[in-house]
Length: 624
View 1: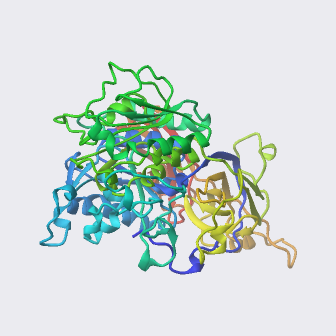
View 2: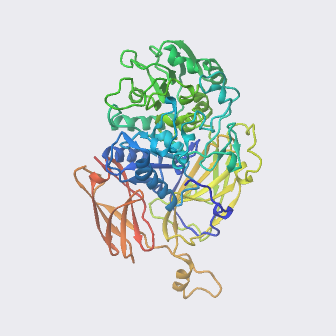
View 3: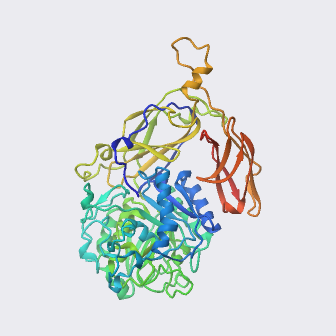
């Protein structure tokens, strides 16, 4: 489903787009491992918890409206079969990616809560296949999504101990126990990239595999977290990026059976981290008693006494404990669930949903923290360190990346802050807009060049243009593009210019602006009868689509009421993100929607006129 475009022209920018600039242009935090444009957020439309967590995540990360998918899921919130996962969750997700034309940009699927986190997929395996008990066809939602190509193909490779070719370094010598890490590079993951058996990028589909990153933002059933705890963990992820935290990484040698699979590599990982300027502590015991500066915790024990041995996690911290069922969040579970680590302040955590038999390949290598410290995202750091992730449930913000080296992106052609009008009224800068993005990488140039055969535009500081959340083109740094409104509705559109460092981690930064497209040239020409012969008619502003709320704060038991106006429209649709929640006939009216159908927290609404497709500015209200 997640395929790169089949023809080079699909990567190219729509030629000659006419625009007019509206409203402020802002510079956003840099991202490693992609950014909000590359994440598809999956929400259970029948769960207030799921919608509430999603609402906060959309606001915190500025996810494009088109990147939010609501699924009508009404089944068990903990367990699901492979067939039902395919039909009830994955099919709507991949269908949305296809219909919204997002296949060239989605690299990560993030799940909100109240979706089943344990998947039993024995019937998705070849008939008659007998698997050893160490490879039971029971996995986690995140692991199975990462390996969804294998699941949909009904391939037994999904349960193999080396299914994940994204892991660099000497993978096979570390499957049972970690023996050595080697000079492991850290790399970005894109769903279009192919990975070879040795963990390197390749170009031949016959010898490579593709993956899609996946985490759950939180679990709120059973022994999971409260909605408030999940939202707080997402806020801590943002805080870690605003100011990279100080602290130490703790490698604990606790119970022998749960430490042995990877303790031989603690020293090597510690050396790599110290080389990055980090403080590292290797100690005996299960928890670092009295530590209040934990950036990373790697331990092994079925029980974590987080109440009796308080541990202070810094924002952005990743913590995990190698044990049999840390990812089992059912009420009847016997071991400490990973939700306790989130409750204690960790930003990311992981655990297996079924007995993994202490096989190293099913748990993160100590290099997890090395990849993260080098600037990879939380999701990339996890998946670069787990050779067989199908049973591993990962909780946390996939985009969190406190230590990314941030590039600078300068976009010529966008108005500077000093040029903004005092009011919120949009203004026309010029009829034709030429955009030129220049990306200046942070740090030294990459040590290794991309594999031979990759397009040059991908190998030298590319930048990408997104219009209304959808990728429209990928160009080299310094390239200029001209934009016109052909094929786009007149009125407001969101424009994002995203630049990437030309190194293996591909850290990104973005500029965002709202643009106001004028009426098509033909319409403007008809209205300009007095225009001098041979002269171009002046660009004519499209009539704005108005959206006016009755209140900006709405009680959960109440009703959201919004007045909509769109001159000439046959109907106006009110959307929450990308889904329709109400509509009115004609060119004006009052749209209403029960607040309980939208979830608590910050709600993004937008009006869309039919049949033109013109849209309003986003409106944010708060449901309490």
